[in-house]
Image (cartoon, rainbow, N blue to C red; front, side):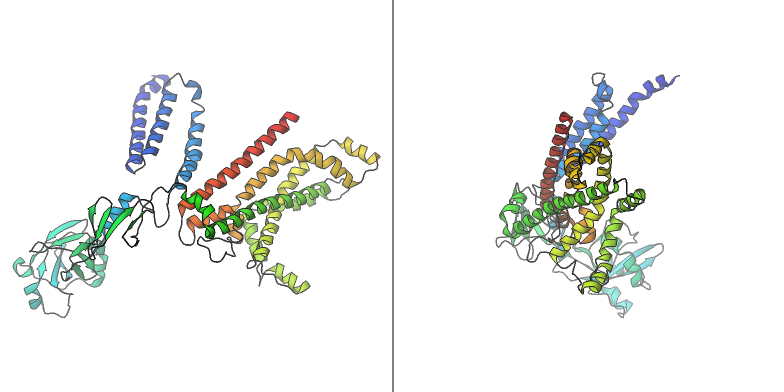
Amino acid sequence: MGRTDWGRLLKWPFTTVTALACLWLVFRIYASGQPLWALAALGLFGLGFFVYLSNVAFAYRYLFPGLAGMLVFVAFPLLYTVQIGFTNYSSSNLLSYERATAYLLEQTTPGEGHGWGFALHPDGQRLRLVLAPGQADDDEQPETRAERSLVTPPLALGGAQEIKLEPLAASGFKPGEPLPLGAVLKNRQALAALKLVLPDGAALSYAGVREFAPLVPTFTREAEGVLKQTATGVVFRANRDTGFYEDGAGERLQPGFKVGIGLGNYLRMVEDPEFRGPFIRIFVWTVVFAALTVLFTLAVGTTLAVVLNWEALRFRTVYRTLLFLPYAVPGFISILVFKGLFNQNFGEINLILNTLFGIKPAWFADPFLAKVMILLVNTWLGYPYIMVLCTGLIKAIPADLYEASAIAGAKPLTNFWKITAPLIVKPLTPLLIASFAFNFNNFVLIALLTNGRPDFLNTKVPAGTTDILVSYTYRIAFQDSGQNFGLAAAISTIIFFLVAMLSMANLKLAKVNDERK
């Protein structure tokens, strides 16, 4: 039997197994409470089977893996982030409504009945629990304890069990020395899974290291979306606008649940003055940071490229190699090195400044100096990239132009402004836009160098004077207090559209340049 025959023989069994696996995955997504994503996954799997099993879509068999990967790894995270931006998803609203309700209903408090102290006793290969009213007393005489004690049947601890108790005197069990406290603690999880039933039908649950006690639910369900606190009788109703169970006075139960709030996160950026102030300043600083970085790296990189292109300069290759080193060293290492160099008390930069001028700038405490430091470090990290680009572009300029300029008596600055700059600016512009977009989201520099600090004072949301939008979003989502994932997702969506517009401008400029060639 040839390879083709084996392929035909195994085709349908393999297809059946793959289809069943895909259906199982879709069912798991649906069971997790995501019907829309389950429908999307079903459509994607169905399209895949159509492409590979039908001759009609034969031409798309090589394109489908790339398109599917783009949908799963690009479109899905984007759409999921956008979706979260329309919810109140945060550290206090992590659960779904159903899960938050179940959690509150699972809470228990000690009932009015007294507790029962217990001790663990070995009985062959198994264990028995001996219980007596009140806390266990190791000094109590065994005869006295036996008169009012209850005992379980021999137990193999592990898993949830409901055990009926019987009087110790009637059981015939003669307890010896109880197991020490260490053994009790070792079996604590197994003991917590037990439910002990007294002869009168009352139930006891594990309530402490040495005690079982009757536990009653903290809340009872009165109706859909209505919980009643057992101890006080206060009624809490589910508020679908805030995502919390609230009483008449506005007191909230924790945890809350996730609900849709529409444009609430986006409106907060505009309407809340305590949030709007830091957000606008961070947005302006992000644009200024990205623009100045491009400007400074362009100035330094272009200047060095022109100087190193001077043929009369000796050891040009050595200089070019040394100046390229900042780009060869991993960025995070350079950033951490600079963090030490700018240390106010022990950094070499302040040591030199103090020796020469008697000053020790507070680079990390003063907002303006912190921004200056960030721009200096980022210029150091970015100029080699521009230098290499400009070097290549300058090499492509015909030498005849410079020779004609020399005959006309032009100076070096005239050559740069009349020949070099006009010929390199067009191919360089899309790359500068890409550099702007990169620095607009340059999270690593901010996180490793200043972590956004020094912070703004008296703000509801944690924000720093050196934060850019992406680091600000990270702090909102994963650091400090609050962890407001919905708000962070809304800011991330705005960042996406800003970067998308920059990319469109980049493509448009590239298209214009191609048409002019």
